[in-house]
Structures are given as structure tokens and as C-alpha cells.
Amino acid sequence: MTDTLADLAEALRAHPAIRSKLGIAQATGMLGLTGDAAGAPGDDAAMIETAEGFDLLAGEGFIPAFVAADPWFAGWCGVMVNLSDIAAMGGRATALIDQVWAPNAEAAAPLMKGLRDAAEAYGVPLVGGHTNFAASELNLAVSVLGKAQTPLTSFDAHPGDVLLVAIDHRGRYVNFDNFCAAFDAPHDRLRGDLALLPGLAERGLLRAGKDISQGGIAGTALMLAESSSVGMVLDLDRIVPPADVPLQRWLHSYPSFGFLLSVAPEQAAEVCVTFRKRGIWADPIGGVTEGSQLTLQRGGETALFWDHAQTPYLSLSRKEPAFA
Image (cartoon, rainbow, N blue to C red):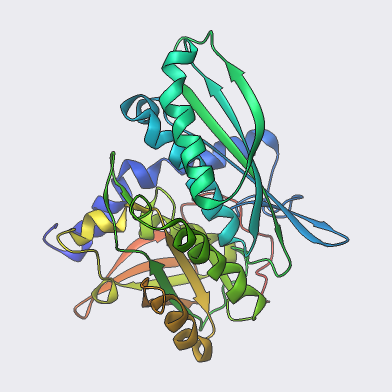
């Protein structure tokens, strides 16, 4: 752990997992996308309204070094992270497709097995994709389709909301800063845990939220704050990592089941209890404020982590705050 809160804020700002998200703004700029574009870029999944509700579409590409280090785990993650994105939008996943590049079928086999194992565990079918067995190295991308009746977005956090986190601590680190709580979990528990998010959204208990991504709690809070055109305070004294995990590492780790939620104060207790009943750690860790600053707080000390008005992060906020 760094010595002062200001040192910790600086270390987080400089961490590759957090800085890597800055590339999103470059990509969306090249495509001419803003937070007001069709599908609401900047959310965990694209959201398309239909006569029956909302279709959700998301996809993940993987760093080649990550895939090469553990192809089976990369295949598993291809399913797992996409399903979390759909759940974060208050949706239920319906199908997955994969895109696999490999020098040959033998090299692709562990990756393919990881995809199949995870699809079976979570009960979402793989329905096709694209395969190339003449590539120079192993690469993977996976896309998912889902549906939502009461969608949960990144654009609706409101000043005065409670910021709470729900993370499954029953896991271990696997490959880089990926904390996986899925390997030893019964399949019905994995499916039931993901179903909590659409259930809570449909009961009107959630205002806004995001899946905790590779940017960890800190980076995900920044994305949520910028998308909603608000500020946030993270109270580090309230954030409890799993046993033997340093707080600094936890703040930029990816948990296999982890969600950051903006909730009206009178509904926070019920939301937390819903997760805790399934053995998932859930607690308020801060609040939503006016402005554009994301501030860290610890032991009465405060430090600025990021001001998204001064230094845009994803550059995908809407022109006007949703709550205005």
C-alpha cells in the first residue's frame, strides 16, 4: 500500500488497467459515436428498444498475451465477462457467438473447451461464430445477445444516491489481476447470482450501475460518474477486499462477479440484503455528488482521483445529465 492517500490516487491514475480505458475515447471518436448515439455507447451493452422490451448486445476482445498465458481460462472468461455485461444492464443473456483465430485446431482446443465449459456452467448456448485455423497466433473475441424489460444504464446515477458494491469474495486470483469466484461454484449458484441484477432492476430498486471491469472499482466508478455527469466519493474505509488481498490491488482488480450500483438511499439496505442472502459481499462504499470529481476518502483524509470534466475518460457522457 502506498504511504498517503494522494500517493494511492496517483498510483491508481497511472495503473495500466485504468489507463487502458482511455483508448475507448479514441475509438469512439474515430467512429463518430457519442453517449447520445443509437445503442447508448459507454454502457456495458448496446441497448436497442423493440416492441417487446430491449435487446442487449455486447462483445469482448482479449489481449493476446492473456489468451496465450491460459487459453482455457481465456475461453471461460469470454463467456463470463459477456454475461456480466448483460446482467449489469438489468438483462438476461440468451445466446453467445465466438470469434477464434489460431494456427491450427490443436492450438485452439483448450480455448474452445473453456468456451464450452463456461457456456454449460452458466446455461447460455453458444450458437456459432467465426473460426480461422490459419492465423499466426491465438486470439479470441466473444459476443452476447440478451434481453431486458427494465434496463439499467450507466447514465442515471443521481446526486444523493448511495454508491454500493456487490462482489463475490469466494475466489482466488487467476492470471494477472483477475479474481475468479466462479470455478468452484455450483452451476445453479452462478446462474442465480446473475439473475439478481435483472430481478432488482425489475423491482425498481436500482438507479444505475456497471459491471466492475478491468479498471476495477476505481476505474468503473470513474466510468459511471462520467456517463452520468456526476461526481462521486469512494470511502476506502468501507471497501473490504477478500482475505489477504491488499486494498490497492483490489481497487484495480477485475472480480468475476462484481457490480457497482447507484441506489436511492431508502433502497440501499434492501439491495445489500438481497446479495448477502446469497453469500455475496455487498455494502455502501460512498456516494454520488454534484460536479465531476471522483474523490477518495480514508480516515478523514481526502484526495482527488480524477476530474472527468478536466480530463475526459471515455468521453461518452450525454449532452445533458439524465436527472436534469
